Structure formats: C-alpha cells, structure tokens
Length: 272
Length: 32
Image (tube, rainbow over all chains, first blue to last red; front, side, top):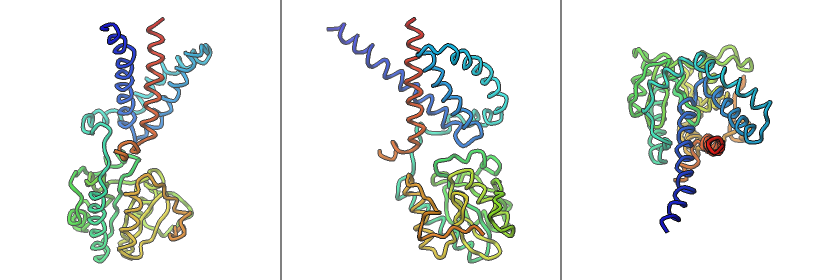
C-alpha cells in the first residue's frame, strides 16, 4: 500500500506541481514585460523555444543546431537592447499580485461615474483634458514618462490635475483599475494622414495611444469643450452624459467583448 | 471566478503550453 501511494505521488502530483510552478513562472515573465517593447520580442523567443523543444523531441538535428546558436546570441542581445525595460521591470518586481484580478462591476460603475463627472465639469469650464484608461494592454511604458501618483480615481482629483494652474495639466492621466497611477504622461502622437491637420496635439496623442494599445482615451477639447472618446485609432464624438456613461460601460465592463467601431451602426467614427 | 479565467486568457494558455512542453523536454533530457 505505501508503494502505491508513493507511485501516485511520484507520477501525478510531482509533474502537476512542477508544471504549475513553471506555468506561473512563464506567465509572470510575460506579464512582467507586457506593454513594453520587449514583450513582442520575448513572445517571439518563446514561440521559438516551443519550436526548439519540438525539434529536439522529433530529432530535427539541423533546426535544433540553428536554434541552439540563435538562443546563445539572442539572450545577450536581448539583455543589451532591452536593458532599460529590464531595469524598470526589476525595480517594480513584487509590486503586482499573482494573476492580478480585474475590478468588480460595481467598482467599475463607480469609476465611470467619477470620470464622467470630472469630464463634464471640465468641459463646462472649457478646460482640456486627456484621460487614458488601461484595458488588456499595459501602459507601463507611457506612465514612466509622467509623474507617478497612485491615488483612487475621483472627480475632484481629476479636476485638480487638469486645472490650467496645475503643474500637471499638460499631458495625459493614466488610470489602471480604479487608481490614477500617473499624470502628465506623454503619449505617442499619431501620424495618421486621414485626420485633418487642424486637430490638436491632445487629439493626436489620444489617437496615437489608441493605435498602439487597446486603451480607451477620453478627452475634452480646450477650444470647443467637445468631449470625445478615442478607441482603436478612431474618435467617437460624445453628444451627452448618458451616451458617455453607456459607451464607457460597454467598453470597460463588457471587457472581453471586442468593439469594432467601424462596424457599429449607432456610432460615427470621425476620420476628417 | 469566470473573470479570473478569461482575464489575459491567451497569455495564460500560452504559458501553460510552454510549461508543459518545457517539462516534457527537460524530463526527457534528465531521463537520458
């Protein structure tokens, strides 16, 4: 009987435990680099690793030899090219939760209410603003260009940040979960020629960020006080408060539902 | 619970495949 227990322990529990630990390790490494330049390279390397292992199992000698040489060089190249990302990443190690959870629906509704309230108050005063809400793609790269805040998102804080007298009003705010993580962040400017040359830097920054990530960016124009939401490299003009709340709920709460703006009948994506 | 599974699902599945393949390979190497 003890032999049976030992056999079960060895043949089932040990592999399961080892695979689980490896799984968590690989997942954490990928999440660690997600949203940075290094992520796609790392993902590519991991694909090659799978090919390499399969080549070894299937005894594909040439492929194995080539990949062995490639890995030897690529690890050194990776360390040199992505040295800044590695440095920042290591500095943040341990700050995240394992398999970090998403917000509950009630918390998300409260967040949307706070953001909407701030947006409408700023719009009434004709104060420009740029708020990026993180979704699947991490915005680590961009928040490092701004000033780290880490405060629970509230209408009052958002209004204070964008008040023209505030030293933080230039640039954008990044919201992760229910927290404002950074302000005064620089977003990449879009060079999409389909948009009018007259659109301002704030709009170009919103477009640029949504072209490169799946973030939702809400902005208020300083000139016209108009509110728009940028998504997937396009704009959705917002007519009223209810529309903004409904759109944000759709984009943030129905998290896995992919919104294809161009196919939507009730929205108009501005490309002028 | 459903949210936990669907959140970053691609990355989770990808890392699981990678973990299984690595485990099989390393065990094969150790068994030689």
